[in-house]
Image (cartoon, rainbow, N blue to C red; front, top):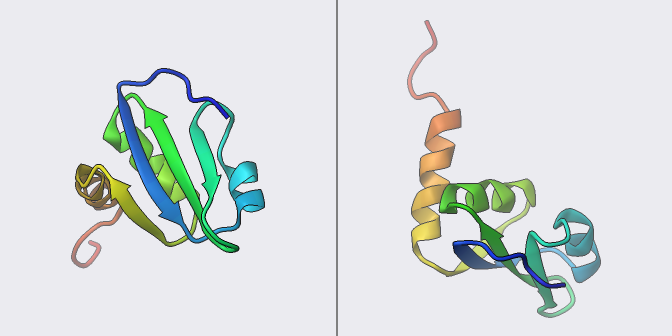
Length: 89
């Protein structure tokens, strides 16, 4: 699958089989490569690392970030916006 042109790209190793990855990643949003029986390498494109972070989270599985390392920060920042700290009032 070919990716559309995006200003940002990130590659992750997802702990899902290739068939499931094909169902989860929309055409043009990512390129897929099998990486063993239960893993898939996915390269996502997006307009920002935050957009890619959301796509990674939508996989709903454990991932290892291959590149760029800045994606970890984008994931942490995005999660910080949806998880409140401290007791609710």
